[in-house]
Length: 303
Image 1 (cartoon, helix red, strand yellow):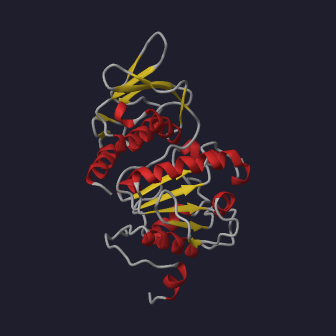
Image 2 (cartoon, one colour):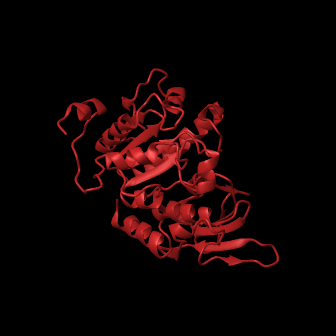
Image 3 (cartoon, helix red, strand yellow):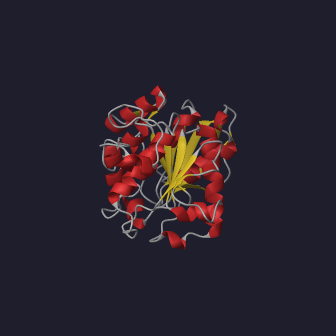
């Protein structure tokens, strides 16, 4: 991951600072407090937050931390540099779980302003320098409440990621981003099962994720769960590297890590994540960059 975002993520997790403005620390994002540096209009209750100097690539992380800290239903008037672009800002707000009341409006001082509402969902953790971008189908209600993807104890994503050496800390998406692994979803509407996601949600989400990948250029994209990829790209796809990429980057598809997918053991899920990591050249938790592998070659290699 780039030094700028790694430093921003590290500072955000430890002191609540990032780039051109301060953001809440990861450990404080469930207390309902409001974003550092924001001001609240006592008459309307609207929070206003200006980040005109924050680089566009660091905006998703700031939005993630802010979304986790704001109570659901809070209104925030966000001002950023117009270099972000109105279309990109609109897509980043969707990824951050912030629903815009209107289109971003240009200011006279080279800024864009958008009034948004904090929705009940899971915000992306993405940024420049990602070696691997994890894309799920959509958040569960449990994960939307926790603010962490795959947070339910029965889900095997984090145990598999730890076993594969993809992450070093359990259920810490900000630390994972600092290490080079980002996280997003096709759809942002929380549901109990992936089967509840509609075709329209898949299509809109795929377009958003494709633009995100083309912009931030992660080493590889790993889609967790076959349903989304099969619905949109290849109905006959099997787990593993795919012949079709996204946004110019290689794609790996792996089985769902949900506890409902009991037929896929934890060790196999870990092998898939390790193979996806290798595809994107993500260093393992020890700092070494392994050669590209597949789950089959990993299982046959000496241990």
